[in-house]
Image (tube, rainbow, N blue to C red):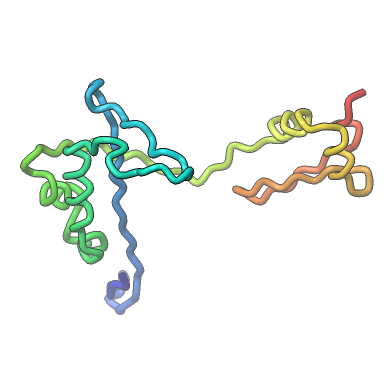
Length: 152
């Protein structure tokens, strides 16, 4: 949602705000454990293949009632929204956890991946006597000499 805000000098400025909710089934008791998977696509009848957990079904229905405006309204905080949805069952809000945009790739990890490839795969990946691997998360490119990735 686009919000009209004011900067430190009182001048209007536009800001964007996004929101979302993830509902996750976390069983704690054996009777709440995950039900069996649906049968594969072999033409079997999926109707009645497993029993739907009533509490999970209720939570799913409640989450589906959330309006997009509720997720982006700065006046509707996390606790308030959760209370609106689940006050009859009780709500516990845990302290927030920071989310980091941090890659865990390293030259050593990628060298280990390359060590698991066949000699034929390594040969096909060579360009000018080197193998280049680019991390899809952080876009760092690592270059390995043939002697680093070929068994001696």
